[in-house]
Image (tube, rainbow, N blue to C red; front, side, top):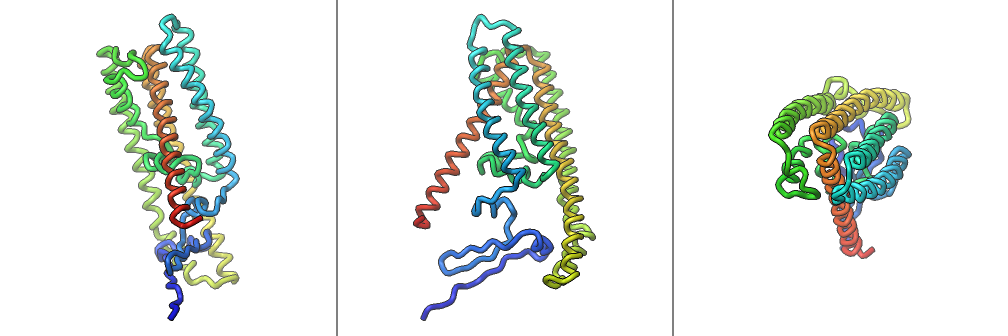
Length: 297
């Protein structure tokens, strides 16, 4: 006898008021039908739905990365030229730093419209997202990169020639940046804990008792929107705080290095970013192909 599929509803009661914000994601697999309330980023992966902010930033990001690759070639070229002078080195460093600043200028402008897409970005790979720290790279990573480049001499040998004074200044900067990282992490922790404060719990209770289509539902939806607006403002502040630490780290390291070392340092950071993105994209493409094959699509 044919048995009807088992239906399983997964809706965390502690955040049931989010039911008003996102529709349930329906999935049928091997006799089981799942109705799961998924984060917006997961829904987008299956439906290819993107917000206007995500579409605009994705378009910008793709062009930005292409330009970054061009600048990487220029950095490597200048690094390898034995007759390159300080003016040439400073010129290419200025181009790259301006390009990096442009990324954060556009990011902040669009995040003011919808900050949530930057915490669950659809324009980077799952591998990149796994190593993300508050919508970007972790500042402390830069110091590990400098150490690795010093030992390996890649992409240039100039960083292996750091003076004792430079090494001391970099170590002092490392300690300072770690302190600022911890401050931003505490700010993020406060945002996460605020999800369970009395106001949010009360909203959850009201949402669970609201009647569909009634005045109560409309009222609760309005209260939820106001509460989420406050949370988004807090998340935007945390994101900008993390970005400021990132920019401060880059500037701090560049101020310590000479022009030739700056070229090699930026070449190394750009190379790492591009290689990580390429590796992540290839992995995601292979996973998607395997999934389609297993489902017979």
